[in-house]
Amino acid sequence: MNPELELARALLEDAKLLLTHGRHRSTVSRAYYAAYHAGIALLEKLGLKPQNYAGKSGRPANRWEHGIVTAEVAANPRSSAILTSSVALQLRWQYMQRIRGDYRAQVTISTITAQTSVTLAEQIVTTVEGYHAQHP
Image 1 (cartoon, rainbow, N blue to C red):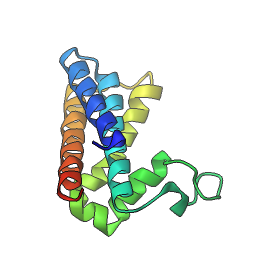
Image 2: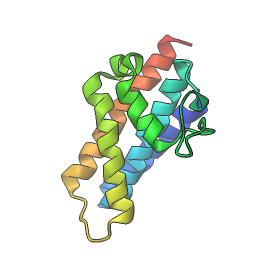
Image 3: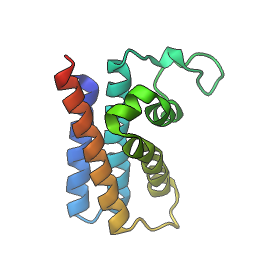
């Protein structure tokens, strides 16, 4: 299996475990990272590389930056067709929840937000796993 997808699956399982223990901040963080790594696996399967994009420095990126992955998964017609555009657009929402959970101490992450994050991550991971299986 693709290493990015292996990591995505492990992070998704962590998110589910955290959700069962009511650890909503950590749940949204792990769910986002599961979807993020699945997004990387999809972009790479489509032949894309971080160097194809300008990084924060304005130079070609030397790694998959969050902004590149969240934008490209939604904007690239091939990736958004695989994930469906509505699911692909949700990666950016997941990123924002991760920021809220990791850095905004005054913000409460609700149960519904945590559950939604896990559900979306599962959709993305499962869809990318299916695409990889169909296109070895």
